[in-house]
Image (cartoon, rainbow, N blue to C red; front, side, top):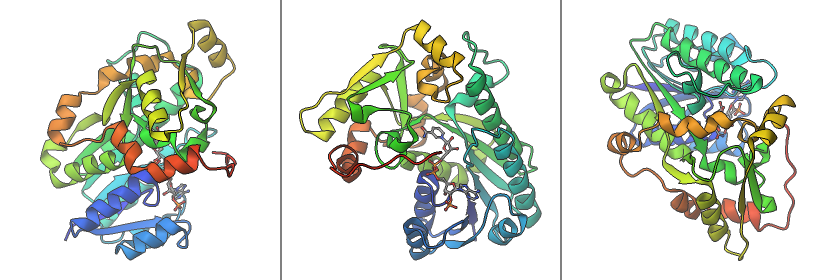
Amino acid sequence: MTTVFVTSATGSQGSALCNELRNLGWNVRATTRDLNSPVAQSLLSAGVHLTLGNWDDEDSLRKGLEGSNKLFLCLLPSLTDFDQAPRRAALIARVAREVGVNHVVSSTTLGSFLVEPGFVPSIRLGPFFDAHVRSKKRVEQAAIDGGFAHWTVLRPGFFMANFVEPKIQFGYIETKEGSWTNSLTAESPLGLVDHLDIARFAVAAFQDPTTYHGRKLGVISEELQVQDAMDQLADAIGDGRSIKAIFMTDEEIAREQAKGSWLFFSSEPCLRHLSGYTDLDELQRLVPGLMTFKDFLIREKEAVRVTYLSLIDVHPTPL
Ligand SMILES: NC(=O)c1ccc[n+]([C@@H]2O[C@H](COP(=O)([O-])OP(=O)(O)OC[C@H]3O[C@@H](n4cnc5c(N)ncnc54)[C@H](OP(=O)(O)O)[C@@H]3O)[C@@H](O)[C@H]2O)c1
């Protein structure tokens, strides 16, 4: 029997993956820090073997991983301790190997391409973003060096879910205020990804280890220019508003970088180059029927309504 241990199972990618795998009839194991959360409860109802656990606690990880032969590795970054996620990844990879896992799929970020040897961007990364993507790269390396027979790294682009609750609270974008000030240009395409598509790529890699082994795959669902994405979002909200993409000048970006801003999309001109690291034709061939932003906004119409049309103000929570 195939048994997959899914990290971040109650998160957007992880919960989508758990559901896909359960639909295939595979065993799914995972941990959470809160068995009573609505997502944890729905995973339990779907038949996921969910136990209490924490990425810093080896005993709970071992208990969760016991009996698994595949691992989905997706860890949250710490924006104050760039060693934290790599340290956790190394621990999870070691315990996974010890219990008999032989196949890992790791989901990190498209930004990892910018610090890949041989992929030197023409623009220097800001120190904060540089530390963040190098930390992600070390998470990938823990999967690659973990001694697994097969490994695949998925590097997702910008989540479509960032435009709605609850992820809009992270503060990447201020579209609720009618604009999005960003460090792209009017011409540079934005690689958007639906978290359900990330899950579908993870399933594809788990089902076909040979084809996907050794790949570092940039994963997006659709590429759009930022103003087009804003127009689609405004249309989906449907109350006649417009949302303006504001493209920062190089001087404005340099000032943000000098302040050490963690808001990558208003301080990193290198993001203009990320579309060079994805191949939509190949992605469509590997996983046909990738989501469009327009259809994502229809599927998530309740989240769009709550985010943009609700009278209740949702207060941001710190990262
Ligand atoms: N947003 C974007 O545009 C974007 C783009 C590229 C890559 N990414 C990356 O995607 C990842 C986030 O994925 P996501 O959005 O699917 O996740 P998410 O929805 O933010 O969920 C976070 C998950 O992390 C788990 N978690 C957090 N701390 C934990 C700990 N100490 N021990 C065990 N579990 C812990 C939570 O589990 P419990 O709370 O249930 O314990 C939850 O399942 C990040 O690494 C981010 O850098 C994001």
